[in-house]
Image (cartoon, rainbow, N blue to C red; front, top):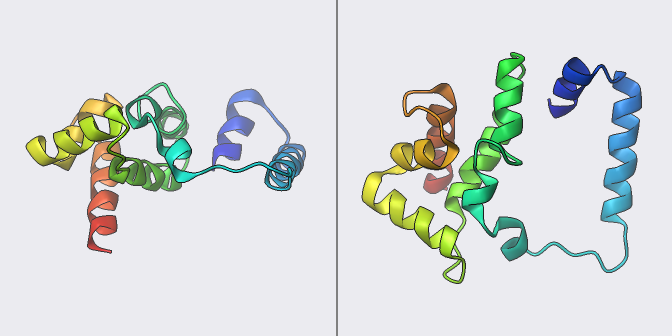
Length: 132
């Protein structure tokens, strides 16, 4: 999915890109002492869910190139679930969900129209995750 975007936008050759991505992933996951606690991965969700950052940014690029972005949008839904009372951004998002509902909150923090496909998919995923 994301590799298809990189191939289309930047002209990377598929097998070279996949080889590089696999190598870097394996290197990162096998580095001694490397840990990624949930609190670190999820912190500052407002920044991470913004239209120009690591989740919604690539999702928008995929959408522009008519590529699948469902996994990114599913990940974004988990971002809206992130709760940490010590993270002001997480508290702000949870307060917004309580006061305005998930669709309005997703639209606000992703900077996408409330009636957009991206907001609908993230909101639907959020509801599915909420059900367990």
